[in-house]
Length: 108
Ligand SMILES: [Zn+2]
Image (cartoon, rainbow, N blue to C red; front, side, top):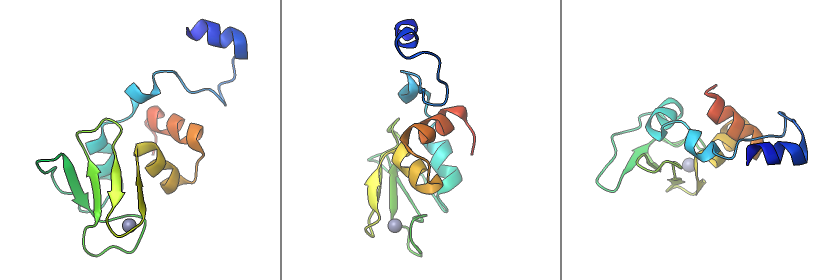
């Protein structure tokens, strides 16, 4: 599979993300623990709550499902919702592919 893709598109590391990138995302608990202040333990439904990094949050209104490998999140105060990649894009300003590469590369 990968070889055929490489044959079609050539070796362009700058534009390439591996097919299995979803399996290589960091552990949601580790990742969000580094980016969300006061992130609590997951509740019965798998969601943990912390301070939203996208608005001036004083009462934890950011929920993230730590048992979900995609790391689904939502802000109850209206900042939106998404997955780990959209969160990382919003935090870093990177485009989708760059955000994925950054996440699976383990940096930041
Ligand atoms: Zn928010």
